[in-house]
Image (cartoon, rainbow, N blue to C red; front, side, top):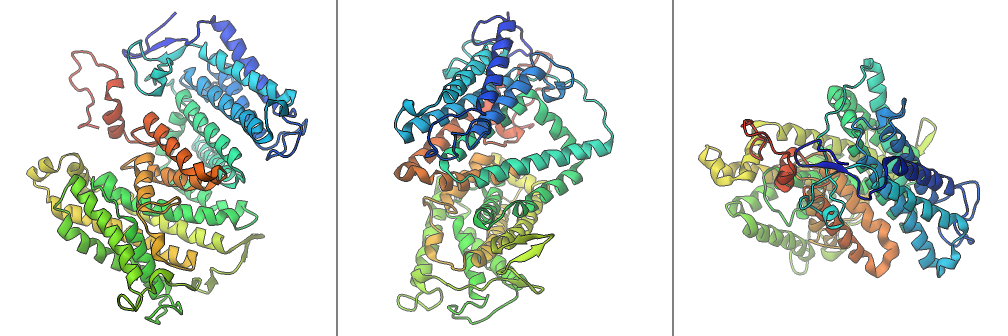
Length: 595
């Protein structure tokens, strides 16, 4: 049996099992996977997380438990349309159930394979582990037998076509949402951000690689499941309706992260993520809005860091000046703008690959110059490869960022203090990006990105606007650099390279923008977070870390070439063939130019 909700999709199962049997399999499998989390999966506590306890989940078992519950609830809400749970699946699509089942199976079997690999064979699995693996596969089998939104045979794109799934996203009209009082909608938004804070905190706090890998798998499939079920669409409508509340809730959730920590171990990671994400947002102006390929952008971060280090009272600074932080920040931003204009003025008449090569050269020139300003091969300014050490902690209005502070009975350490400061800087950069991106200048940048020749023919001064984008991007990177100098205590040239195993560097910054979603605000933030966490959490792979990281990027770009969080224009650029065909009389079909 099949139906066609749109002209380019059909609703058919992958495995031909009668609908009633498919629902029973999915319910039984998800319930079994949930129950298996309370059983012992292995006989020894040598595997991280101690999966030997019966009656209480541990480590990766929590992920299987979460995935099993999500699959069970979406099955009750979608295929069975159980009253009281229908809000979980407004679209009624079974694709959400399939994604949840995929996440549960992937996480469970990752755990079983890791146990076998680390402990020396399948003999180390207890019956609970076998039950978990079998029931997770049973739920996946049942989900594949449900009627799914799929491309017709011979159509479709991506990995799902090659696997024979041909999954599609049907444009199902959601039923009218139940009218709620404004205060209830506000509470729902707050609850959503609180749940997001809990999920992100759990991911950042994972203390071994297997748990983080399982977390990534489950989180990715869960987000896809909620998107296909229509719940994310409903939530997005609420955030648009209550935009000021959404902005406040997002900032409050981010500011609440240090208060969930008992030490500075992970707030230091979060602080560096914010620095990396802020610089990526600055690069997003250059690459995402103006379409300029900059391969040496990390140099502007270094310019801001060095400028702040020289005027912040470091004993190693030859200037011997200690300006207040606001003045040091303005100095770093101003020097970065100057460098941006000086480098951009003679080079921005180039386009494409030629511009990329020149900016790559600028990044290397900056690093080599900082190495040579050591008093021997050049003037004594940066101490060469030793850099500028012992940069003092900030003290703003009597608040010493280097000491612990008690706020509401919770003690915040040094990195927590800098995290909150960097959060303010990030919020400022987000505001600048949002305002500029929606302005006449931002629209002119997009026109230049799409077709510079056509934009100039329409009267846009391409060179002046590209130079403005270059200078603004450099300024925002310099602002982040002024904070980074104080966070790291020391500024050295080898921190600002084109490519390295850990960010920030130019290659990772560009990847964060493209992977997250060019031209969006949340895209580079998500991309930077993933690109900082993945290499750091995959250290257990040792020599294979970069290989695994590269494979991960290839898979992500194959599945989502437009980025994890893409705007409508980028989606059409990569998936225009998936847009439902319109009737011949409908002459106002959406195109890339109109998106």
